[in-house]
Image 1 (cartoon, rainbow over the protein chains, first blue to last red):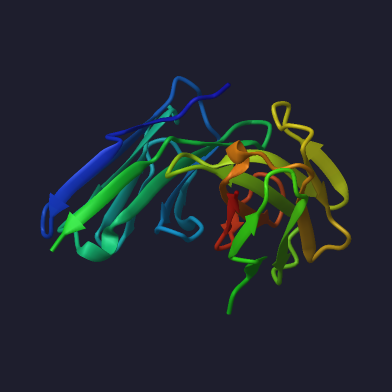
Image 2: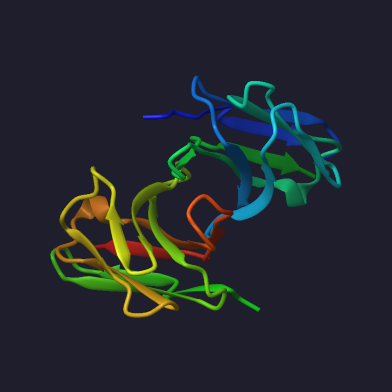
Length: 110
Length: 112
């Protein structure tokens, strides 16, 4: 089993603060995806990172794939209440199978 | 416009009473997945179809079955729901295996 561990599990911050969410594994992944899921809805794909060391930016969100393609981070600058949700990472192995992380539940208070 | 549609959004069934959840897609993707997600946990893959080929996960109980009558539709059948089967059921599609997955809004199943 290729486990993806996310940290922290829960995060409650004030609007305007910065935060980083981590997704770690001992396994190598072909690519890694980040999703945001709001209560009662399905996950929405935010980004896919493929190359070791790759950095992608999506407005206030910065995603990085580790050099060894075993880990990833999501950094949010100046968090807003609309960023509230469950953040999930999902790694793709060489057999085209996705493994989801345990998720980080983010609450941004106004 | 919704690309992956799940019906119903909320389903209540009785213990042991068969229930069917449906998923349809307008993306013409080759792969359709069914996930079970409990209480803000990670989605757990139950099975997927690649075209007409059914791929079951090793730890998916026999109580869960699936049908894909055509490219657009896929069904999840729970033959005898138990209380532990109460969860959010998510359908997802991808163009091909390993490509980005697009999720539907999910069906929240309650078992009474």
